[in-house]
Length: 456
Image (cartoon, rainbow, N blue to C red; front, side):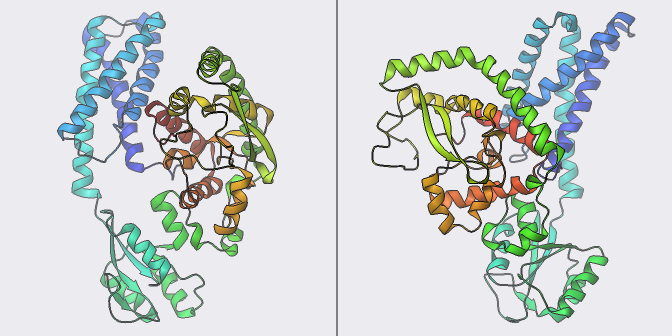
């Protein structure tokens, strides 16, 4: 259920949560010398508020990304911003929750401990990974064809992997863009032992050679991980390689999104109804302001209705705030593009902040959509994409959503190439949908909305 979450980030966040809790509990003790009875209950509740705000803010300000060294000046600046925002948010929260207030000295001591503890934890964790845990995994690729080269190109520049070579029965000499082909299937055992291989990736679509299967099984029983090509690609990228799938893959692979589980058919619908009602009530003042702004700027209706395909190919009217000129599609349906001249000034703002999507909660309430799922596409585009992208029609096997795994991982698409990349993410979601993945997408959507990534 947690495979889509980077383990290093989970470990870093768990350490933060523990250290923030310790800092919050320890400060009153250091200040007063003991825990007085009336202070215990507020502290137990306050630590939850404290921890949540800091963890959430650290996540929003990218303090769990390992893209730059923790000791660099760039990260220090990012850390200072994240800590300052989190501390301000805690002050505001305690203002509205007076029962959780602490003395100024206690609060200052807690904040100081959080700075020292969480930053020292980052430096220590970075050192530990660099010194002990970040040895590149040695990968042996079975098959030097198109699928094998796809895997090689995927990981050749990734410091977490070291491709020792290819095993291929048809091409037993020479070099294919490096690394070399080590031999045919008969030397697989020898190469695994010689190179101390950690994982074998089988990129042959239908391996039938009994000796190859026997060697792979032997390596697996010796502790070497064995992947098929789609499985390894999925683990590394968080998407499913549509071009290399087969009917047999769909038949043999568990696909959680189409499973008639209690979560898929009961819990998710209940959450959709509850959240859509809450969203309508909470955003009503914002919707009134947006509607007035749209009306004042240009002629035409406030809402824009557009035919989309939903579950099992059934069409419905998707509702959005109108963000383009009224005659934007007088020449037919076209994809939106970056800096689209059809977008109005108000439309550019609400698209940037994702506010044009708010009316879609009505589609959720009606049961035509869910909050999370693949984005519903227009029938005109789907008809064309089905003929050019394999298995494209299978994305309608789950209810479409306002946001989804593709939306938080890939920028707004405006071409068939983009549609293929987004389908890879959609298939990952359909295959792995769980409550944890849905929650992860929801949190990342909030982050995308705040920083305006991927909007057009």
